[in-house]
Length: 112
Length: 118
Image (cartoon, rainbow over the protein chains, first blue to last red):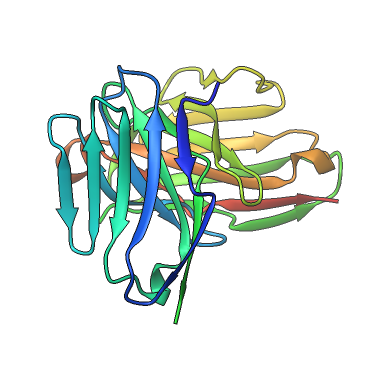
């Protein structure tokens, strides 16, 4: 049973555009929702994370939007750059940062 | 920021041999470390949770005798793939959950180890 569904599987965005990746979850006990960025041959790196007590969190060009009633959250990358080209994973956890359930990932390509 | 060092980054071995992968938290202590497996263009699958000083907890379907995990100190966990076979070829990633200080309750990932079994 896939507990965190991520879409799209791949995404191509022009430089300067907005990249939007969506995730939906089923377990209402999840209370921590991070996004990770992974470059080929490297481990994931935490980009930004949110807890369900807020509906939006912004850090630089990255914004998480969270809809608790719909059990959905999304990552928005503003002014997308070629250096943002990577695989992005959403994740969810219960009770903190530890045991994460990952989405299947989105391969983002930002064209110059 | 906190650094997790994973070594080696790449290893090629013959079928039937054992391979040890190290995961070190360089500037923070981690009572809990996690080991994941990732196939090309796929998500991370949690293999086991490693707790310092105790036995690891394995996810369903992961053979504990095949993937030996040792977490002997607050900064080091090792994964040994025993009697490796080609189907064990994969990208293995560790993560460490920090305790105390700036890393407290934060999760940091290693850079991964690409294992190729011939």
